[in-house]
Length: 243
Image (cartoon, rainbow, N blue to C red; front, side):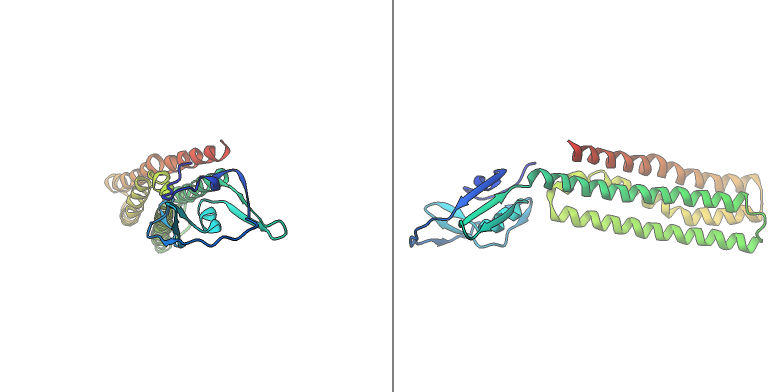
């Protein structure tokens, strides 16, 4: 995994298992406050750093943890041990990406279930009164609004990850189109509800076709532009976890 580290002499801390022995003698040195900006994976480090003999120095724990490593100190032996978790860190980010696409995938499944419920109300609820059927249609349209709110939350979650690490800017590149199509399909539910109630009150071929066209458009968008793409992206990043 490529890391963006702007600092000198930091390679030692990227070893798989590095042991640093504390010096047994003390030496007084003069250092300069350093104005260098240190960026790790697109995020500015807040730890102070200083310049000594042309080399930038940073706190051992701060820089190690910034690149996903852990630091342990043995007071008896005065040994600081740095253990890199670069591979697992990348796997964690892949798993996070897969999880977000998985959430979108299951929201898409809820959209299919919503369409199935529309079918039931229109064709298989003859035991209900007209008022009851219309009430159910309205409830389903309100549920579509709830699904849209879920998608908005998932979109906000993606934006949060993208701001945190540049890795996610690339891994979520397909999410923009998926979410756009998701919202497009969900926005059509109000129209579907209206045309469905018109058809239930006046069973003409024209009214049926008007309802069916909207229904088909929603289903096509969800199936071709959302459901399949979410599954593809989820599987793509799950494979990366196991590599």
